[in-house]
Length: 192
Image (cartoon, rainbow, N blue to C red; front, side, top):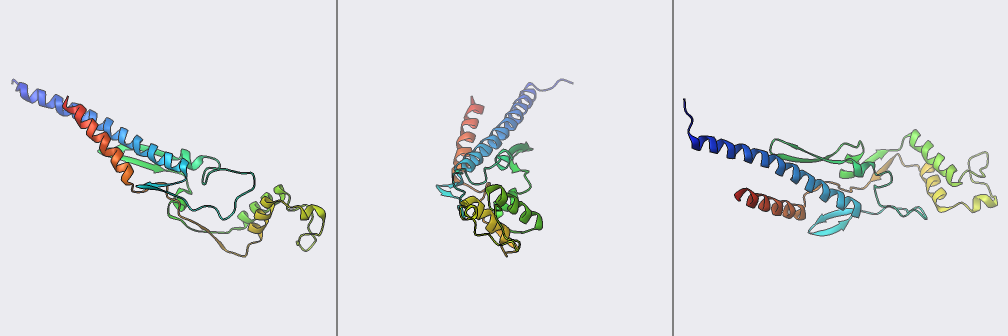
């Protein structure tokens, strides 16, 4: 049985469109991931205008680093993939959700031990009395600001710590414009 030439041409065009559509989705996912990474580096939300994330309550002296960027794990966790006619951007890091939505985390004994370890590392435990109160020594009076912060965290009576919302993924008009421009150029390339 002989096939119609127009049918064969149409099938080739359809297959070409499917292949290009997959490439377009992959490029859109990459574009969105890059958009979120750039704004993560800038430390805020870009939606028409740039809105920075809420700052820390305290800053360690001499440590000028960006929010959520200490080890870079959360930043490197921003990934993208494509599924059938979908562009997906996600983050697999365990604590990404608490930063995305904000919330409260319980203060555990392990956290208190960590706070004490950091306080001792910063020099907070140089001279303590037997009852745990700071001694009156010269070393203790010269406790630096970082040691003070860690010691206060270790001694806090709070049962929870509040983590403010610092969204990594969000709806953005600027991202929509970028995707729209890409789609328009992609459609124009299909027409050639």
